[in-house]
Amino acid sequence: MGWEEVQVHGYPEFVRTAQSYHGRPVFALFCGDKDAEGRSWCPDCVTAEPVVRKELHNLPDDSVFIYCLVGDRAYWKDPNNEFRRNLKLTGVPTLLKYGTPQKLVEEECVKAELVRMLFTED
Amino acid sequence: SIQAHKEEDNPQTTMEVNGLTPVPDSYDYDLIVIGGGSGGLAAAKEAAKYEKKVMVLDFVTPTPQGSSWGLGGTCVNVGCIPKKLMHQAALLGQALQDSRKFGWQFTEEVKHNWMTMTESVQNYIGSLNWGYRVALRDKKVTYENAYGEFVGPHTIKATNKKGVEKLYTAERFIIATGERPRYLGIPGDKEYCISSDDLFSLPYCPGRTLVVGASYVALECAGFLAGLGLDVTVMVRSILLRGFDQDMANRIGEYMKEHGVNFIREFVPVKIEQVEEGTPGKLKVTAKSTTGDQIIEGEYNTVLLAIGRDPCTRKIGLDKVGVNINERTGKIPVNDEEQTNVPYIYAIGDILQGKLELTPVAIQAGRLLVQRLYAGASAKCDYVNVPTTVFTPLEYGACGYSEETAVEKFGEENIEVYHSHFWPLEWTVPSRDNNKCYAKIICNIQDNERVIGFHVLGPNAGEVTQGFAAAIKCGLTKEQLDSTVGIHPVCAEV
Image (cartoon, rainbow over all chains, first blue to last red; front, side):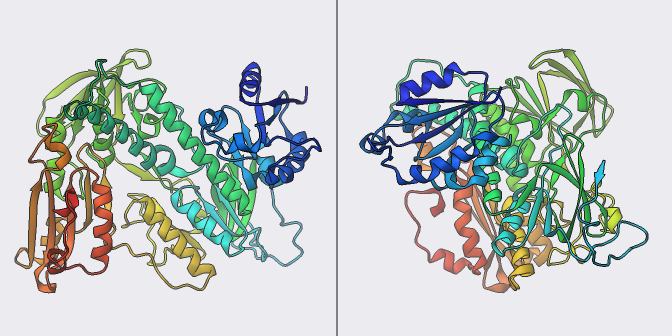
């Protein structure tokens, strides 16, 4: 069984995808968009992504990991963007367990211990 | 099966004590905290600051109805936090009514949805539970969701919900296990009644409710349930708010009565029976008078017991390590440094004998204790002049002596009480009561008319009281109070 990864871009695609996996544990990592060289405008996201990826093998069976690029810097800075308004995200990177209040924000995402706790504990 | 931790690995000599579990010279932890509530978490986080190896054990034994909750203790999960949020929900209902007089127009009937409120409250609590777990992990405090009990000197056994047992040793222990609601001990109480442990996560609206008890828990719950539009009755055995200033307690009761809460005084339930199953179902309550032979019956959807709380100290192996407890109450006597009769075992929070059962007190005691243990500090927790607030529909804030305790301690001729009714400006336009809000201070004539008691009944009583608590700590006198110019127009200027 294991777990699977889905990559999405932008809010509508994220919501559609998350809802399609209703019934399975869904984890999501939100990062700033990447440029042509594959580098995100968000420096914390650049640091956090490898840390998170290293812990993915700890995901519970049947989980879905959604890797979501939120948009460019200008979009993110807008206080009314849909991620802020509807998902109540306050910063990127954010790593969360969808449908629960469990999440890690910004510098919490670079701590392997905390990422592991989010993935493995109830 | 029990896994012994580290004892075989430890080549150093161990001490056999009375043939019980040997006491290792090097311990697994510097400090083990039993109980992850307000006091326990504050102490654990403080100890981690001083680079101590700390473990927190927290476990919630489910209620008879099956309710349970996450890390954070009573306050966060089934106490202060959800209570205040639901009290706020009720206040907002009142505000909606008032708003029409201020010009707001809406044609719809305003109704309350219990599930919407409860879901929001539980969601917030969930984020707090998670936040505590992140904080502990981040500070390298080991947290186990397991039931801790002493099995021998310096040794505890931790049992998780799957029944797996592990042994841990520590140089020192802090007991912070808190309390749980008491039951009546009558037929049907555990099967059919709920307590505050169940109320804040109840997955259905409680409906017509009987609240048994006259504690602040009983009155606060009765208050917000009525404020949300439910039919509420409070059954009181004798007096309201025992231990609080009785004049203020009676004013609170009067206000609640005038605002839709029914009171049945001087009766106690003797039997609870189920008339109909359901969520909620229908329960029949039979009650007996405390002053005669009269028996009454009533039907309610929900019966909420709020008759007191008992310390969780009887099943944690205290006898195995010789910690004294008050056999009647279960409370633990400690010295002014929160130390039990066993030098390496400390206790904080609601379980302490003779101390206030308040979250900020537990937190303060926990922090200062740890600072004394590991940071060479000497400050002790000050239990005097601790301010409190009761979040009944008409809120009550207090700091210092009640009028009756002041009279008892100083003599009636040596105290002076200054008091005043006040009418909050915000209540004038919607024509709300003009003679219910009330404030009084109690002064010690022999000590420069020092303010030794402060009591206020009115909106935002907690906010008002906090500042006065600081002033009282500084030795506020009547003269100083008189010479302080008031802020206008606010209730606090009275």
